[in-house]
Amino acid sequence: MKAMKGSNISKLAILFAATSVACFSTQTLAQTSKPSGGAHAHVLAAENKQTENIRLTRKSAAYWEVTFDNPPLNIIGPAEVRELVNILDQVEADPSVKVVVIDSAVPGYFIAHYDLLKPLEDSTGMKPGPTGMHPVPDLMVRLSRLKAVTIVSIRGRASGIGSELALAADMRFASREKAVLSQFEVGAGFVPGGGPMARLPRLLGRGRAMEILIGADDFNGELAERYGYVNRALPDSKLDSFVDALARRIASFDQEAIAETKNLVDLASLPPDAEMQPGWDAFITSVQRPGAQARVKALVNQGLQQPGDVEKNLGHYTAKYEE
Picture 1: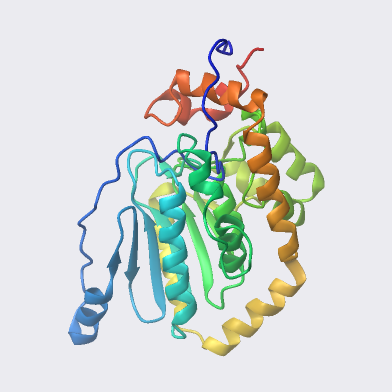
Picture 2 (picture 1 turned 135 degrees about the vertical axis):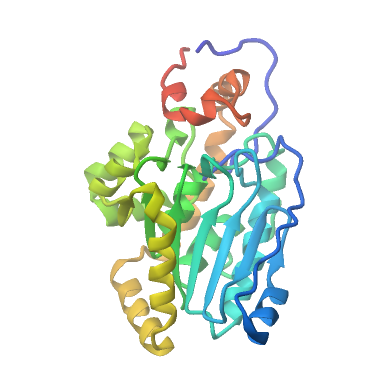
């Protein structure tokens, strides 16, 4: 695709760690949870929280579900980051939570990527989180270090921040037919900001991490499983039941045994928190470079952050750019 010459595009607020959100108006979703019988179930249903784009459902005291529901693409921007931080605060504050499942209600998209069309100041102006880092790396660190076990169920595209959020969770399961994972940012001219440079080499090894990050191409569910990008790729018809059964199994176990075991695994496998903020800083610097802005403008002109072929085949379109 030819880079557009002429007037400079405005600086893009590309927190590109997952999906395109901002150019579409937010929608308040009025879905209600179905209580599963008994007075306790009705109380839990009443406690379920609905935000504009992210739904928190307490399936039981020990088993919570977080669902991205921001059609058409499940894009994440500053507003959605704040929603996630609020949900994370609730998980951290409730000692009864043992397992959290993160999934999507939008067909074709787990999380497309970070919102590229918001003013950059909307992202850079956010107040630091409890770790002292920007809310995006703060969110990723806190998610990884929860006492509760976190499981991501990926159906559709998980690019940029969508991939990064999945990597920050404890386990990842994908639809064999419908999942697509990628860190496309280098193909669009900038550096990923949500920590994949710290996580992928530890998870997959250096060579495969380089292929994902610098090759910047799409990985289907089967290949993601082969690389170790996800735990398993399951037939799409079995994904939901498998994840639910695993979550319920974990929710039935002893709380202290879960937390102590998870903490020891974290000590052996998680990157130091200090590795997360530099990635975010590199992202913010890189998205302002003329080369990145030219590439993103070309993608936007082709249909980025709109339903259509560009978002469905992002790896293909980033490779079509010509100077």
